Length: 129
Image (cartoon, rainbow, N blue to C red; front, side, top):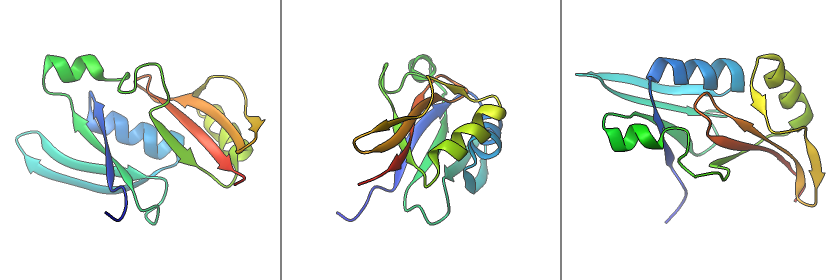
């Protein structure tokens, strides 16, 4: 094995998820391929060089729809590393992103948890290790 490629995130709507992650979080849209019949391959990542990405999957069953926003239960679903936690926090908060407090210094860096448009928890981390 070499690396983690994609993490699947269930969404209600591709375009609203793209809008949130690209325009509010600051991710890049890596792919948006429409295969017809409502099937799309949509991936976003902090940068095109990040080595892994989130692939959006439109929830098409009741079981999948029930998991939107709680894919990791009450725990953080994804850790997003940054070089400027305080700056990204200020920018994202100014765009309406909901945070669970303010950035704090921890032994492994500076971090703060935020929620996406569906309620998934993500950790914004500026690592010091």
